[in-house]
Image (tube, rainbow, N blue to C red):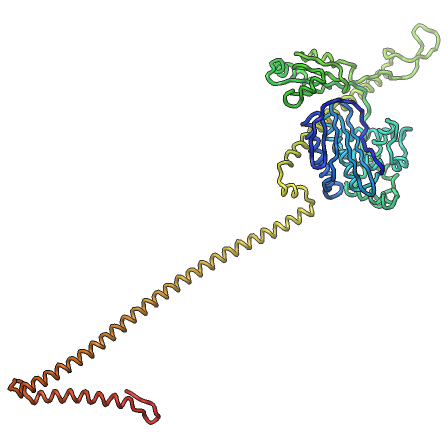
Length: 566
């Protein structure tokens, strides 16, 4: 088992503070400031996912055990150190220590150190130092990258320059602090060139090829079409020229206020606008009830508000308490001028001393310059002054960029915390996955449209069927009514037929009775003539006789054996 230490160069500064802890799925952050602990933990989780997607193409599974992160913050050198162990193809024993100002921790130190853990999970073996640190430095804010880039370019062609063969072969850091800083600068110049050329996934494949072949020549040729020397020369050629170092002093003032403090309100209304107009002066305002704590304030020597701490080149100069005017505060910021023009500037040796006959040369003091020499000196002073102005502007822009990057990242983290899992998956999807999702969404839309059409057609069919059922019901009802009417008519006809028969029978019966009665009456001396009575009786008897014969003939079979009737 072997342990490895991955770090950014840092200045150690012991701070004894009570630590608060913040837990995430993969990190446990210990920090004296609970809010900063949460911000660092959330930032570490964000970059763990983002780096894995950007460099490896997919997120990493959750670690078996969280990585402890110890944080020290303040106006101290920014940097970090991450340790872990490789054993039998596995990586374990995470431990991370980071320190620096709040903004540098968020925008540079955390993303730098987290990338070391991503590479360790990917390759599960020690990486050449230049490749690991060059890539990790690539994830920092531009202000930090510029420092490393300038350092790496400034030593080209000097005795301090680390040979390329030594740079590529190094598996350990240089022991000398100055040489270690140069090592970072040269490593970043080369890594930035490769990453800008073909991106992060190609860089990871490039390292895979190196591990498989054991040859940088093979890896460079396969992935970048160059040998290592050509690549390093190209990196130097395309990189920005190093900025000229300018000797100047920088000042900043930390201002501490709180709510319901009249002196604080008066200072912000009357004096703060004057300080904001001062050149080359940074101001930071802390509210002791919002973004600072009284425990920290007491450690800084502050017992009341308003209070002020003046720094020169990031080193504390004085702590002031109670109301101060802008002029009083600016008086503590008047050191040497920002540009030390012509100090030690040598022109040459010429001319004898005044009043001397000896042809003795000496160093020419400034007041003895000739017009041509003074013009040259003034031009040089103007150039250096312009460099100082450019440097100041560059630093201000870098500070603004860091502030904006920090606020943007915080806003991103806040937005991400409110996203649904579906929204996160869509945001994190690759272009191919998004195309696939778009295709699936089109299919879903088509299915939904077909579903809507089917439902509409089904509803129309149901309506038509309902109409048919209603029409059939009407027909059945009409048929039933017709059948009932027919039955009534048949019954009436049958009743009428029976009534007719009964009437005929009654008539015949009455006729017979009348005839018999007439006959009998006649015989008995009645009025009816006997001849008429007999005629009626004969007629009736003949009718019934013919009727009987007719029925008998109807029942007899014809020649074919079938009964007939007419």
